[in-house]
Length: 239
Image 1 (tube, one colour):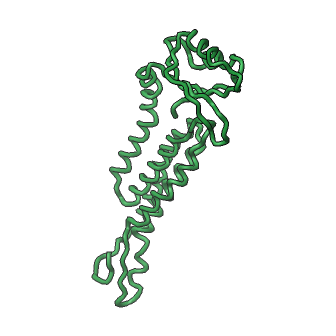
Image 2 (cartoon, rainbow, N blue to C red; image 1 turned 60 degrees about the vertical axis):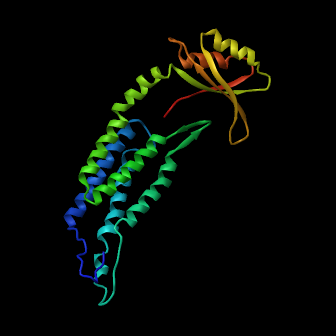
Image 3 (cartoon, rainbow, N blue to C red; image 1 turned 135 degrees about the vertical axis):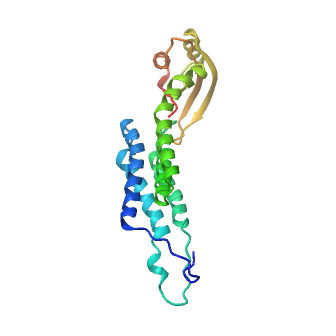
C-alpha cells in the first residue's frame, strides 16, 4: 500500500491487537496441550509461544508501519503485509527441525514438528483476522492428533497385516540360517533382509517381517536377540 497516493494505512486498536495475540496463544496452546499429554519436548508452552510469536510478527508486518506513513511530504511509503508472514514459514522450519530426533535408524518428532508448523500458521491467520480458517485448522489439527490416532494405532496395523521392521545389530559371526530358523519357526515370514549403515559407519541388518496373528513383535525381538552373534534388536515403529 502507498501513503503518497492517499490510501488508508491499516490501523488496529490496542484491544483488538491484544485479543488477536491472546487468541493465537489459546489456539496454539490447545494443540500444545495434546503434545504435552504425550510427553513430547515441544509441549504446551512451546506451542503457545510459537503461535503468539507468529501472530506478532504478522501484526508488525501488517499494522506496524503506520508510524512511518507520515515520515515526510513527497516520501513514498510502500509495504507488503505478507512479507514478514512469509518469513515466519521459513523460520519455523528451523524450530521444527529441533523437535525431530534420531534414535539409531528411527526418527521421532515428525508429528510434533508438523504441529509446530500448523501452530505458526494458526497464529498468522489470527493476526490477519482470518478467524474461520484459524479455528477450523485448530479443530482439524486436534482431530488429527487425537481421534485419528486411534485409526493409526488399531486400523492401519491390520491393513498392513502386522508387517514389522526389525533393526538388528550383529557381529560377523552371526549365522543367518539360524536367524531365519528363529523367524520362520514362529510362523513369521521375512519379506526382505538388507544391510544398512548408520552415520558412524556401523553395519546393521534391516529385516521386514510379517507376523502371524497372536505373535507380538516384542516376543519375536527377544527370540532374535537370543541368537548367537546378535547384539541388539530394535523394532521400528511409525511416529
